[in-house]
Image 1 (cartoon, each protein chain N blue to C red):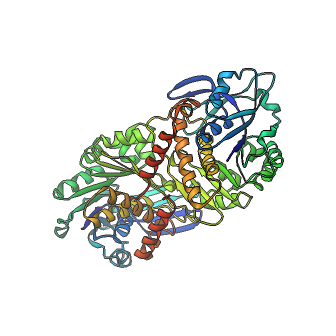
Image 2: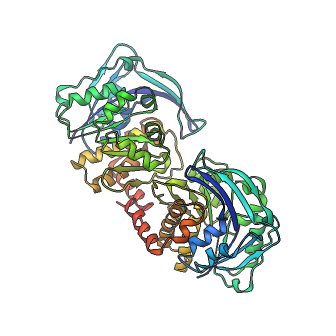
Image 3: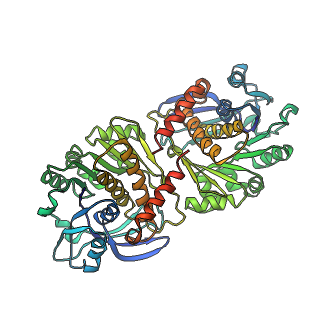
Length: 300
Length: 300
């Protein structure tokens, strides 16, 4: 079943211990869509500038991603400049040029309206709420956010959280959102704000999913000898996680567990090359092989 | 089969977000021995002062631990004062009073000489090496160390590492010992120093074991709503891990995986109360129940 994702389509200029890249294709919606495209149909809503060329769009369309919802606006695309030279686990933002993204007004193309699964990537919660409202019949809504919205736009964010089936954030964001340092209590407090399930990502250590009924479930991270560029790893995790759920047509405890593993798999691939390079060329056979690898390193 | 552990038997004065305790029984050998005692016979070598009373010794003997190797010396026992008020994941040392431990000269009682498994807890690597040499016929040697020995006694430590079957350290120690931030490469570099296997503990996220032949294996940490006192969690992990291995009479890939889970189980219990309180009253049934719980939260 189809996923509609709304979020940033951008260019990233990156410096990591493995090298430098200028203006590679990035953005949360891009990473998410590529990762999810291995599991199900994906439709993207975003905005780009005149620097977004057919070759960039082709990265998505080659994976069968529906890009009709990517609006062209006069000017330049969102451009993020970041460095991981000091710490591969923490991006240092050197520049954020919002450009056309500053005036982003998501518009849902008519053929997208029958999407069953909605993913609200990390954007202004006012826009997340608006898109949610315009898609009243979706079967499931998942979303992401970040420290900026938690700190400075809390009221707006709370309205989005109240409507979410699944929220995906990292440890630091869970602590910030809850004001609680204990991970389990923080998760319970975040879920009390609305999300029926909560996925907390732990970087290289994997991720934990909390549900209102049962016990938490932990998927390991894959130990990687070469982390080239962690940009988009969290979005790729979300794409693998949600793409798998959509492909199964619903969430059972078994589906949720496998979704966590597929999330971890796609996040690990994302780190192996710069930008979306690895996700562009990975195959479903490699994905399933790595799924088996993750099982092997975690199962008795 | 019997484990011989050499290490500190001490008193800890602790402050955590859950409260304060003065001079509770602690020390690496104590935590290790209690955790391991649920799986196999344990013998302890250490030194204590006149403040170590029959009631303290009884904590160990009630668990069937052989304490004949705990030497009494004039003066006070090793006393550590620490706080976790700022960060439950990082102990802040407020005072280290070595007392009788400063002149510790491990002596191996004759009845201990047939121990098949040796655990060198975190003490001066010169002493670790000496004990190792005096136990030439052990079947397996595991050990621990800490940042102080890695930084200031590296040459001595390297001699110990060359003789180890298993080294158990945490992420920070692995980075420090290898000079490498990537976890997988750091592990390979540490194993190149001697240990045939390496267990790296990740605090609340669990632990990873690396072996020279196969793939790494990860055991999850158990999400705990109440972390009362993390002191001794790493030693308790080591006790569960090594105690299980000794109880199985050797290491197969299956035994190693279960040992990692038992390590995580014992580490999680250790955190639930101050000092050794939880390990004193836990039952084997609770241990096996928690083992099943860990499996449930990590297996597809």
